[in-house]
Amino acid sequence: MVDFIDVPMAKRDPENKTVIGIVGGGAAALTSAETLRQEGFTGRILMFTEEPHAPYDRPVLSKNFNAKIDKLLLRTPEWLTQEATVEFLPNTKVKHVDVRKKTIVTENGESYNCDKILIATGGIPRRLKIPGSDLRNIEVLRSYNDLQRLAIFGKLDQNVVIIGSSFIGMELAASFAKNGAKEAHPFERVLGARIGQQLAGFLNQKKVVFRGGRNVVKFHGYSGKVTGAELNNGEILQADLVVLGVGVVPNTELVQGVETLPDRSLHVDPFMQCAIKASIYAKTSVVHQSPWMQRCLCSRIEHWDVAMQQGRIAAKNMMGKMAPYDSIPFFWTMLLGKSIRYAGYCVNPDEIVIEGNLKDMEFAALYVKNDQIQAVATCGKDPAAVATIEAMRRNLLPSYLEYQLGLMNVEQLVRVAQVMRFR
Ligand SMILES: Cc1cc2nc3c(=O)[nH]c(=O)nc-3n(C[C@H](O)[C@H](O)[C@H](O)COP(=O)(O)OP(=O)(O)OC[C@H]3O[C@@H](n4cnc5c(N)ncnc54)[C@H](O)[C@@H]3O)c2cc1C
Image (cartoon, rainbow, N blue to C red; front, side, top):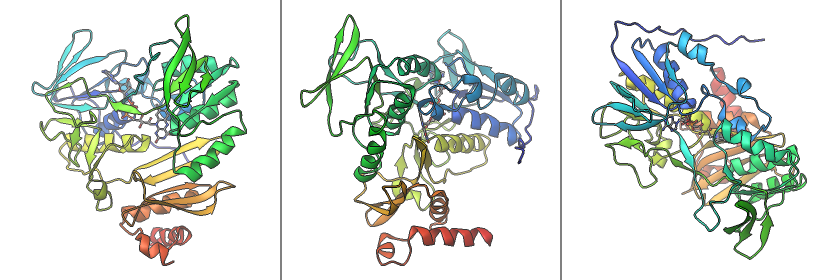
């Protein structure tokens, strides 16, 4: 068995008067605090989170309804305060960050002057603006507290309507099905139509009913509670609970003095620094540095792994280390025991090529845009995901033309990566 060894960390030195404020208590906030200490920072670190908990494993929320917070914590509050000497402030909502004055003002009226500030506030789940949206039992899932409300419905043999078949929508459908909901209805598709249909087929066997390509136009209710979701074809789905999985909006409203992009994200340079004010760093829309990712130029990617990487990079740069963000985005999901990994970044691919056996969920899917392979998803082929990331990082991924000419396929890529590793 391999024991994990913590990287040594500097302790707080009262003589060092530098203050770094971290707004947020999620993945990015934690990795930035840890990295600051690992890189030798001895000043004050303040970490503000509106949640009552220390940073925890958020992706598990949609995958395991029975997860308990003590098992999800990435670090305990005691570890944060004693080992990492972080001033950890749970249940503390930040009202605004004044970029010009470099102050963090909390809802209870406290004001903190900082030398550097990291904005790591994540996203706010989108709500729908359709009739009936204000009815009770229309929920979102972002936090452990949200999960507590949803999990009760899962156990009650009730009708659950899930809007959005993003990963969270699909995972929720699987969780509700596993936990005894009567029926769950996710919409839309992910990963492309063919993989989406295959996943829908798996979920169908578990009492999950899909209504792809439909919009919800109205919620029906009785006595203030939701009773149904009406689709744009007039069909009404019975609902005791509706869960919205329709994306998030960057949580940046609290930042004053920096203009946001149209999607409300903050624009940062490859060093995670807001262009306007040199002391403010953020984990949000980033200009990419690596040659491979420069195709994406500027993007906001909502993955766990990306958040952790960006927290680390921001911390290094807050210490003046000039470390660019050049990682390859990666995420995974787990659906009814099938693990799917996705490396790269491709929005609206021109073509999706599937290698392997979709029926048995053992495949690699290549997402092609502008004649380039921009992302690869794998299922039951973990080495292929790793090989792809390695090839992307080294800018060795074949062009789509080379792929079509048979010069390289995913299996060969795995072998190449193995050779590269041994060198
Ligand atoms: C249910 C679910 C499942 C997911 N599954 C996956 C997955 O399988 N794979 C994957 O790659 N990604 C997944 N994600 C996405 C992943 O969790 C996020 O990309 C990641 O958590 C982002 O980290 P973050 O630190 O930027 O923000 P968050 O983790 O959202 O943390 C933001 C923190 O800021 C705090 N905060 C916000 N506003 C304020 C304020 N005003 N004052 C004080 N504190 C504030 C919040 O309380 C929170 O602690 C999932 C997300 C959810 C919700």
